[in-house]
Amino acid sequence: MFTAKKRKPVRLLCQLTAMILALLLLVSCGGRNPSGGDRTDSEGKPEVTKKVEDPGSSTVGESFNAYIEAKGELISVLSDALASNPDTALDSMSFLGVAMLDIALIPATCFGLGQDVVTATLGILGINDVEYSESGNQYSIKYLDNEGKQNELRGEYDKAADALKCISKTDGKENLISEYRKTSFGYVGQFYAVNEDGSTYLYQLAVSGKDGAIGISQASSEPPALTGSETIDFPKQCAEWYAIKGNALTGVTSAGREISFTYTPSGN
Image (cartoon, rainbow, N blue to C red; front, side):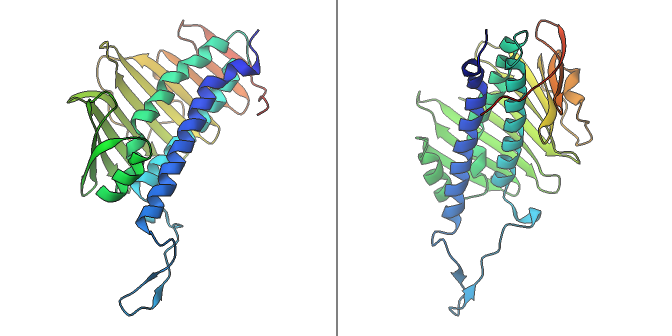
């Protein structure tokens, strides 16, 4: 029998990633205003620091963090729902792949902050030899991993659409293409991942609060770019998918089995 203790890997990974992202965002925000208080103008008069209330004033890193939090909440709910049902408990592990991809995208939190802040912020995670550059709405962070491999994360941010596309490379080879877009109901996103053995997977998601869907398929090529007109059901085009609306969970497992049941949220 699957107990609550056996439900936690995906949820804990999502929570850990969210904590890391929140920490990096907090540190990077502090780096933009080292004094932590109001600035002064050239005449020595206090200049009130503008509050981040206007959506247009948020940075690309803050936008990315908001998306990751929304996605993490959906994954947590779906994985807990599947794990709460003995017939689908093992299917909850399907989300480990998409949760792990967030780790490769962590440097995106630092887009738009400049070399000094990026170096200091990523240094907290032991990421060294950081090279940062940006031009207009395009960003690049290069660094060496603990195996001495050269990694690069490139991003292109459309502020008007609140949409970010990232490409990750290791030793010059693309291994991840990720994008998300803000929609009228929340977010849509997708990941095209290339594994070390050459296998490729597509993860698609749509999230609106705690409702949404995640789809998983093998894919031979990069999918069409998101447009923002996708519906909350668009991940259901994948071979394997799981969706939740309220407490009703539906889906198709990796084995092709259709599932449908009512989810009773577990305690924390």
